Image (cartoon, rainbow, N blue to C red; front, side):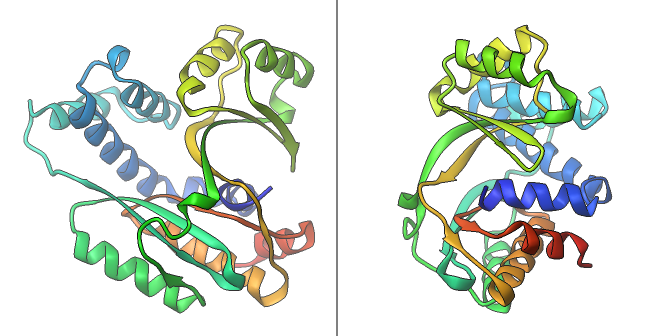
Length: 251
């Protein structure tokens, strides 16, 4: 497991997801607003908005907050406009890193992201410098302890999922980006609702990191993940279970 999936596992082990509830709500509101601005306010006709609404509901966001964010996106209410900006670069050990952001201040976000890369032994590159090392895929994550594993795998295969990955107590269902909604809806029809479902960037190959490089990469990921403007971070690093436990035990 690598990059975003690895960091998701670390967050669960650290128990930091609930502690960052404020940032989660901020990001969800920005995504709801942006999705509505780009594709309209009807979730049934706007797959991106439908996914955002699902995430907001899963996070127990009040219905009024969801509706207000959508109306800001469609122009029915006044609201800020957020730009979607992707940054690409290299982290410790030469690992490729992609940072997707939603921001109302390009200069602030660019400066902050550049600072974090520099602080933790990385550097930003030109647009497109590492994106070719990743494939755009749909990813649905399930906790093995919360589902009937065999039934889930059978349902995923029947829905024509591309791959099924079991690791670190989770099952990941991978789909083609254009088939994501179809597979997700097919699984939900059989009562398999993923707490983490999204279009992701999966690395084609990984870079193994150990020791100081591994721990510094985790710090870079953590710093980026904590930033209010950062929507998602992807990387092609891989670390051992021992390194993972050290990171999970850190402050």
